[in-house]
Every structure is written in C-alpha cells, then in structure tokens.
Length: 117
Length: 111
Image 1 (cartoon, each protein chain N blue to C red):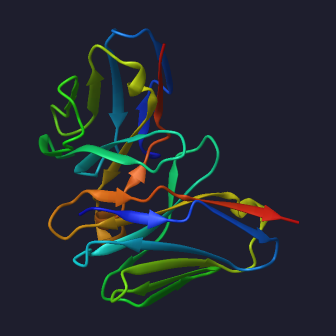
Image 2: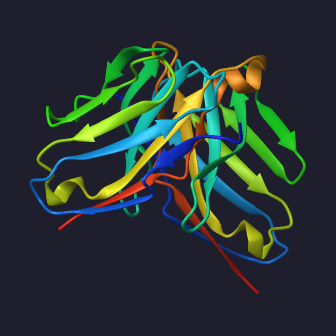
C-alpha cells in the first residue's frame, strides 16, 4: 500500500450533471477525510468518517453533496446537479495506524480536480 | 471560532533562513501542523508539534509554539530552491477530530 489514491484525477462536466469521486485510503487507517481546495486557499473541511460512520459534516456542505464509506475502506463523494462554484480540487486524506505519528497526522491523496462548465 | 491565519507571501534569498508565521484562535488545540504543497502536487506533512511543547527541531526545520499568543512559526534553515512551495499551518481541535488549515504562505526563493 503506497498511500492514498483518488480517482479520477481530473473531471470536466457540464453544469447540472452529477459527479462522483472515489478515495482509497491507506489500508490500516480508520479515519477518512474529505476537503475542498480552491485556488489560493487552504483545504476546507467537508466531512470525515471513522470506519463506516460519518462523524461530522461541515455546515458549508449543501444537500447536493453526499459522502459514503460503506465498508469502512474506500469512500465516495458525490455532487449532484453541479454548479460552477463547485469547481475545485477535492482532497481525500486518511488518518490512523499505530504509533503517535500515524494516529495524529493526515496523509493526503493527490486530489481530484473538478471543472464545471 | 475556527480560524488559522497566515501571511500570503514570503520571499527569501537562497541560503538564508525562512520564517513562516501562523496564528490560531482555539487555545484548546492539541496538535499543530505544517504541510507543504508544491505546484500540482498534494499536501505533504512536514512536521507537527504537540501543544505541550514549545519547540521541535527536525533537520533544517524548527517549529516554535507560543501558546500564550497562539502563535506558531516554521523556520527553514539554509533555504534552497526546492523549498519553493505553499506552506500551510493547521490545527487540530481537542473537541473534534477535524483539522483546520490556514490559507497558506507562498514561499519564493530568489538567487
């Protein structure tokens, strides 16, 4: 296992379409996070899971966004009826494992870049 | 409230030390982090410090934490061209597991 994988790396879609992103975390990590990053900004927290349970969801996340982690392994982030304002990099990170460093730091994937036309 | 503030830009000469500063609002933060993001790449953890520490050194990196002022700094000694990137300060709240990031400081190196 070499790290956090995200797919697709790039997605271009038309306004109003639905898109889904997938994240495969580091296998022994029990926590998984989704962040959104726009140009010139830091990552903005969206939601996170501990195993299969979604423990927190940002107030900024509209009802068009939904995330799942059905078996406590990979996660999907779906955006319905996309808007141009949804264009951003969607970052996934995982946390966990043994030892203080694994338990307290996030390991990020390379991100999925969404462009809504 | 949840807020992490950083200055947007820093320019240093190659070989000099870089100091990137960050302020945060939650005095109950347990861990504070520095991440690096190079163009087109994901975020890479550089170092982190637990809130009961004042300083942490790791090779060319020195992190200083002033809990009273809620101020965190990252010093990069002997700055090289490969250090050009955006540096993000982040904090983890004690009452929740989410990690909140600042807007990042873009470090540029001049010859």
